[in-house]
Image: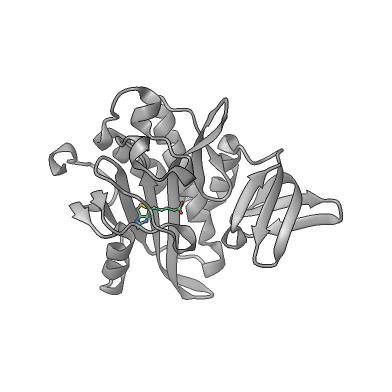
Length: 249
Ligand code: BTN
């Protein structure tokens, strides 16, 4: 509940016990001219994921959206998704959970039998090609929730399930926002930080894109967030926005 927060965050924080979607609320605030705002909720009743999917957001999670107005061209905005993935991975590791990043925007925990999803990130933006007007980075962390209460298809896990006890959401959220704030101000360093936590690099992968399926070895990531894949017929570069699905093969 609200009492658990009392954040000393580098953004002004608007807290809701329950709200349809923190991203939708942040977009409304953007339309009103706001900036440097975090919308945080204990529960979302209409959470949204990538590709217009539902995002299940029961009470106990950390569902938040960061609204800011970076001075960058639209094409650079995907770097903020990577920054969020790095920030949340660091905060999870400090909480004792060995999270890592699956390109472009999933934070996972590896288990013997595969990977389970801990976090989802949804970045939205508006502006002109040469300069974004605003960016909303939505971060959904399965914090103190029972994975059994989340949809099976995502193969979900949570911080509390991994730790065997609840996480201090105030501390976790504060560390997440501090890391994100530092990274967003240094976009050029984000790619390097990202490589440290990536499970994707070195894997053979199959990526579904609007232009078709690409298969090969994921060898690197390029600013602002594209994946470099060596295929039999040469090098392919897939932008984060074009990834509909990525599977190790
Ligand atoms: C995905 O993996 O598909 C992305 C999920 C993003 C969920 C977060 S929770 C906070 C913010 N508000 C939303 O409605 N979605 C994002």
